[in-house]
Image 1 (cartoon, rainbow, N blue to C red):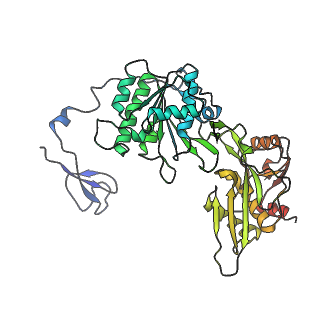
Image 2: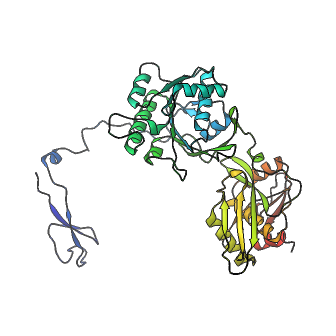
Image 3: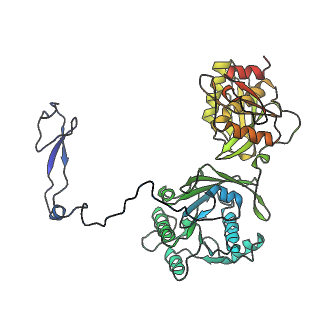
Length: 456
């Protein structure tokens, strides 16, 4: 075996010396030479390297002619919206969600619609028997769909069966945590098995042009279980969100190589399965005639879709000396603490002796920074017991200086608000030009906004 060569590298200038010295001969720095062991020089390395012997690859320019991938529309508009227009041939899609949220039901409905449209579809279940899937299809009214079912957990058996005939247009694997590859050791669900099984299925999808859908389990914090490399291997990652106690479900695109992210599809769980919700704003708004203190309406934006949600705030006065509580559902608790600090520092409103509760109605989760002004309006309304007019929407971003900053797609938000019957909007001053049918009130600072709400 070849003896490893010793070398000394200067940590200041990077020069290499064959022996140690107190001072670097190149840069003159003292005590910077550190010994490093170089790779052993072997006869194989002397004769072979990766710079020769390979196959030349084809290099193309950015202006080369390309053909857009063909999409398979499922007939479920909300699912197609989240996918960016439908499944792409030869793509791999990963969908995750809590147990019982409706992943299998949604995929069974989509597979049945594609089968009715003349596509070849195979549904492989590793958690249920074929009879159980067949009974669920009958409950959903899909018993007559020309859909092929199988109950298997061996990746080799699945790929062997698929290789005997024409590849299907869509292959559903429910779930990837139950698949097992005999190429490596380990129980199904382990990191190595999930990675190996997914790699073989994705390779089949790329080579044969089959759209593969993998169902993934999630952990307690809601992230997809298994190695993170699984999300990097697939083309599209969808997250199915919602509370099992509520009938509403949100399908969110986290990653999409063939379309935009941040698109959502909204569904309602009914006795006949998951049904589409064409107007999601109606789900998250309370129908009332009189205003209630502590509630505001915020036009959130999910991708290209505006969704109007109701923000609810409640403040409770405490006795002196008690520690106030801050509870948040559907919004960032850190951003609430920042907003309370701005209200106290810039507007003179003190929440130090009050418990603060904030809730986004309908189980919706808001990540849009434009919700700052709507949350501030709800907090001021709850503290002063002055209701915000029921025909008003509020949106805008608040800076630490108290400035109200403009947000993206203001015209789209006001247009959707006007469509649903709202008449006024409280917005940043720089966005008060185009109302799209609404009467706009612009504010430059949070102090002016609070003064308007308190009637000063």
